[in-house]
Image (cartoon, rainbow, N blue to C red; front, side, top):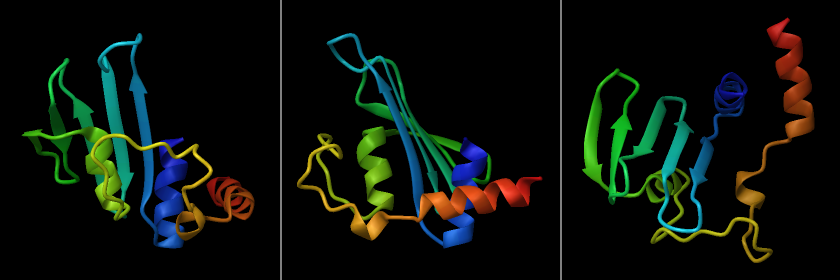
Length: 112
């Protein structure tokens, strides 16, 4: 899947992101975001703190006080304080749209 997301970013010259978080009703136990700009950045939460580790395309990593979701959204030029409900009907996804049906067919053809 990450190979496809990177391909989308390079092919359409767009920022493409992948975010995941896990919780059992309390604080986040795991949170990470993968960003393709076309450079790659990965942000991972550190335990139950407000700190993340940022992995850069050059292989280094930095620990910083931040939130993986907020950091990822900055790449999309979306300001957030940590709450972001993309499933809400009021959010306009139009500026971020990529014709995925065409893109997937092209990706599969190129990958063969």
